[in-house]
Amino acid sequence: MGNAIFQPSHFAAVVLFALFASTVFGITQREKPRDMIRYGIYCFVLFVASAIVLSWLMYFIAR
Amino acid sequence: MATEENKKTSTKSGSQEGFVYLPLIAGWLVPGGGHFLLRKWGRGALLAASILGMFVLGLLMQGKVYAGAHDILDLLGLAGDLGNGLPYVLSRMLGLGDVQVQVTTADWGTRFIVVAGLLNIIAAVDAHNLKTGRKS
Image (cartoon, rainbow over all chains, first blue to last red):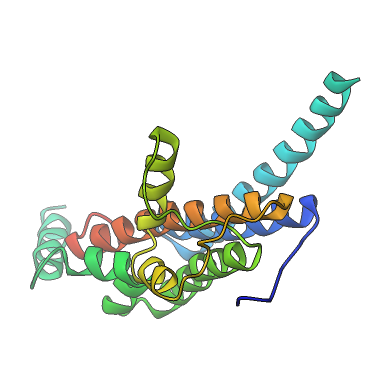
């Protein structure tokens, strides 16, 4: 692992973060498998959508 | 109604056999370990893949593994990193993540490692809840 470097784009990093975090949230915060999947997808969409919205917000604030 | 309540009580007391905190400790030391111990193979595998995936990607992004606490922010980072359990100990033993690299992805990698630890704590507590019958 010493020389291997993973350099994702900012958006790819956000998607990976959202994927892993929402998987754990889905499994731990709901009891039934169907609810777990639905909650996991809900969290994933919220993570990615909020990142996109906040990014555009910061883009306009910086101008 | 009474029968259903009795059933719930018997399930609850049945799941509390043995050392109640074992899934919590196993889940902390090995990501997904608590769920494996309770024979929740699918959940355990997904949790392990997510948490270890996040930890390894954090290291591959040249993220920093906190070794000590020089200020309050370092202390919070260290607390998060310690949540990873054995992967944290292993990375410290192998000297992974001990060099601060000045690239943007290294900063994200550091956050990935900290968040992996925090997610692992949530997963370990979930395993404990399954053991005590608080969750099915």
